[in-house]
Image (cartoon, rainbow, N blue to C red; front, side, top):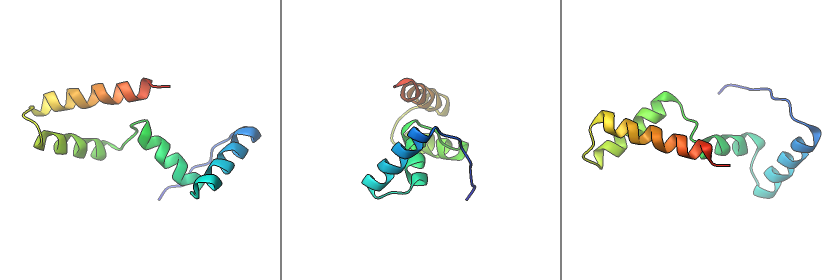
Length: 79
């Protein structure tokens, strides 16, 4: 697993620490969940998602990929 150093304001760091304690999760787990929420995935994860979706639909690979990209963009635009 890779490590990452980020710089946060003191207020943001305290809020993140409090949120992790309230949810009984590590800060890393909260960040990982947030990345999932915003649709940030590795290329392989995205390909696997498209493959699974195609198994349950009658879309071609190009059509399935277009739908997946549209959905990812929609999620990333949400505040």
